[in-house]
Structures are given as structure tokens and as C-alpha cells.
View 1 (cartoon, rainbow, N blue to C red):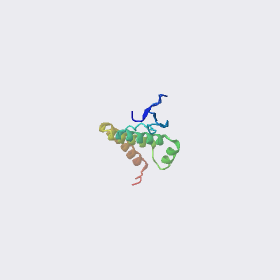
View 2: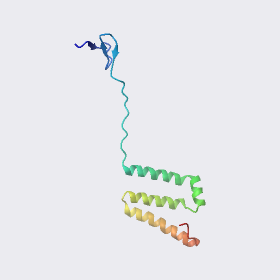
View 3: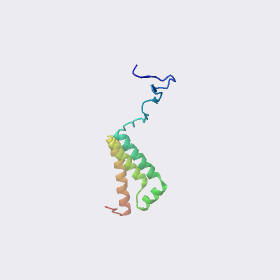
View 4: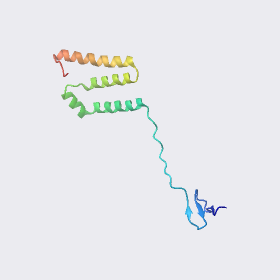
Length: 115
């Protein structure tokens, strides 16, 4: 042999050299690779966060004070999400419904809104 023998203790990877010292492979750590996420998955996460925020009472109160209807904001977000997923029919329905409602509310209040 080449001056070393297999460690009789059976320790995996351990080698006993002529001097009796134990040497083994360097310690390895295993960290599973993060699975790549599809871009649409990331977009969905953003919309889920937005939906959560829009349902938050504090956020709702702030938006309402600024004249923003959170239900319409959620409808607009759903429309944009559908469009980003390529569902143009749903996007048109959601975005059209929300914009028509915004226009009707503005006309009823005589408001021109912010530019």
C-alpha cells in the first residue's frame, strides 16, 4: 500500500496514516439549490401581497380618505393580473368594469379627480 490503511473504526471517509493521525475529507455542507421560480409565480406573489394590503383596514382607511375605493382597486388589480397572464377577456371585463364604475362615480359627484 502507499503508507496508509483504511481506518478500522469504519468511519466513513476516514483514513489512518502511518502516524496514526486521522484525516478525512473536508467538511462539506449541503444546501439545496433554490428552485428557480417562473416569472409569473413572482408576479402572482406581488399581486397576493397587494390583495393582502388592500384588505388591511389601516390601508383601506388611508385609501378611502384619499377617495380611493378599495374594491375597485382590487378589481383593477385582478384585471391587470389577468392581462399579465394573457387572459385578455377577463382583463377586459375586470378593467372595463372598474373604469366604467370610476367614471360613473366621478360623473355623479361632479368631480374631475386628480390627473
